Structure formats: structure tokens, C-alpha cells
Length: 356
Ligand SMILES: Nc1nc2c(ncn2[C@@H]2O[C@H](COP(=O)(O)OP(=O)(O)OP(=O)(O)O)[C@@H](O)[C@H]2O)c(=O)[nH]1
Ligand SMILES: [Mg+2]
Ligand SMILES: [Zn+2]
Image (cartoon, rainbow, N blue to C red):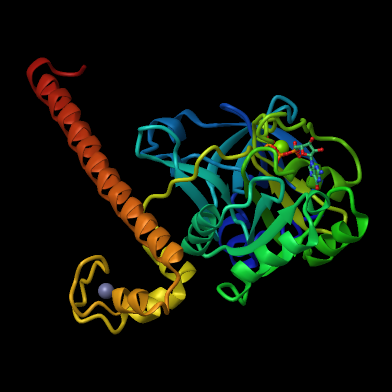
């Protein structure tokens, strides 16, 4: 395999790599402060430079799984020092969990997001719309997979399909069981060489089991779901990129507890495109679609032309995304002001006492 096989875009290869004096590879897994890098032939254990760490302003300045990076080898190739992250084609990110309003990177240079929900008790349209909005926001094509079809009656599968098919005509929707080879073969056929797929979904839906099936060995750890509520036990703890035999690449991720997003209004508009279309006929251009007279969306809701649940999730996701956007911008502003203050104190001291 070479870098193009690993998914590197040829213009990036030409512009950045020739004669750079560095080696180039792709981050295939991230541990706390170290990275595994592959150049298609060998794997390297990497760390970032101190400079990269100190000059970083946000999590985006750090490498993530799927990134192409430039590095230098030391100590007989046992240590790779990462100097630079090459321009990212796409970057999948979410709001980090907890109170802190900050981005958390999921993966870089992804072509397709494989959104997985399981048919035992995980199916949830609102959550699906959340994942779709995130994928669309970052220009990553979604594929929807429903796992554990062996546990669901045919009528239930039909019911789910009826609920979502009309809204997402251009999205691939597949039902499969990790215990049914025919359905696994269908997924395998969809995976294209040199393309990168990232599996996302709740814990316990069968992401790692699918990965193991695709590589044909139980290399990665899986775990039973909890007895009472069928939820997963958060078995996968780091993100991992794996090359498949057919030349495609797939990233397994830890199951998400909750998915919140910062500033994804375009992704939401794309996910709810029938609502976005209606909004063009609202009387006011800054219509919030909640109380205004002359709101085409509220009108459609009243006439029964618009699904109530979809509408309320649309409003909810929009509010949440805007709220986190404002909080994030405020936080960035404060951080910057703080940085400036520290710099000016240091300068004052320097002026007073000379070199510090
Ligand atoms: N019945 C059934 N069980 C499945 C299927 N796929 C996975 N499982 C089981 O579900 C459990 C959880 O599977 P994992 O592959 O560990 O789930 P995961 O999505 O990787 O979970 P995290 O790593 O915690 O995010 C295991 O006991 C699997 O055997 C399926 O298609 N049908
Ligand atoms: Mg897993
Ligand atoms: Zn409106």
C-alpha cells in the first residue's frame, strides 16, 4: 500500500510532501498522548513536538485518527516525532461531553459516516437526526445501518423503513445482523477501495463485532450488552483505523453516551430539507418558526402537512446548536483576552526587570 491507497489526495501529496525532508503517514490510532502511524508499509509509534503542544489553541491543532501527518524518525525508527498535520479533507467533530463547551475530534479525512443503531432497543429517530445533522454539517456522506436484525420481527423493520425512507431518499439504508453472512456481504460490497468509513453510534450496537466480521478475525474486543436494558458497556475505548482486504478503511469509535453539537445549522437544514424549503416562504427572513405570524412552517404544521415530531426535533437541534455556538464563541473570546492579559503582564515585567 502507498499513501494514495491510504486515501491521501494527490494534490496534497504534490504540494506538501515532495522534498519536505519528512516521512508521511496516516494516524491509525490515538492513545492518550501517543499516536500510531502507518505509511502503508510500516507502523510507527509517534508523539507530537513540544512546539505543536505549546502553540496549540484548540483540539483541532492536535492530530486525530485518520489524519495524514509528517514526521521524523528517531532511535532506529522506534520513535516518530510528528511535526505537521496535512490539510484535512473533512473533519468530524462534536461537542465534548460534560459542561465544557469545546469541540472533540472524532476523526479526520472521512468519506462516509456509518451511523449504526441496533434494532433491540436503540432505534431512535431523534438521535438519528442528530447524527445525520452532524455528518451533513461536515460534508461527510452518511450511510445508515440497523444492526441486530436477527432480534427484530420483519414487520418492525418494515415499520422503521417506512418512517425514514421518504425523508432520506438519497441515503443508503441497510439492515443487517452480525450473525447473518448474506447481510454482512451486502455491507462489504458497499465499501470502496481508498475510501474511509467511520462507524458512529451508541455503545453496544455492534460496531466492533461488525469490524471483526469485516476483517475475518476477532482481533478487537467486544462485550455483551447489559441484561436489564440492552445497553452496551463502553467496551471500545480508543479510535482505530483498520485497512480492509478490499482496500477500504474503516474507523471504529467508542460508543457515544450523548451526542451534542456546536454550530451545525447547515447540517440541520440539510437533514430537515422539507422544513428548510418551507422556510423560504416565511414572511420574515429572520423567522424563528416558533411564534411568528406568516410563518410557512407553522402553517404547514397546522394543516397537517408537516410531521410534528420532526418539527419539534428540528427546533430543538437548532436551539441547541445555536446555544452552544454562542457559548463557544464567548469562551474563545475570554480565552483570547486571558492570553492577551498574560502576555501584557509578561511584557510589563520584562520592561521593568529586563530579560525574564
Ligand atoms: N443478536 C445480535 N447481537 C449482536 C449483533 N451485533 C453485535 N451483537 C452483540 O452485541 C454486543 C455488543 O457488541 P459490540 O460489537 O461490542 O458493540 P460496540 O458497538 O462495539 O460497543 P462499544 O464498543 O461499547 O461502543 C456483543 O455481545 C455482540 O455479540 C447482531 O447483529 N445481533
Ligand atoms: Mg466497540
Ligand atoms: Zn417561519
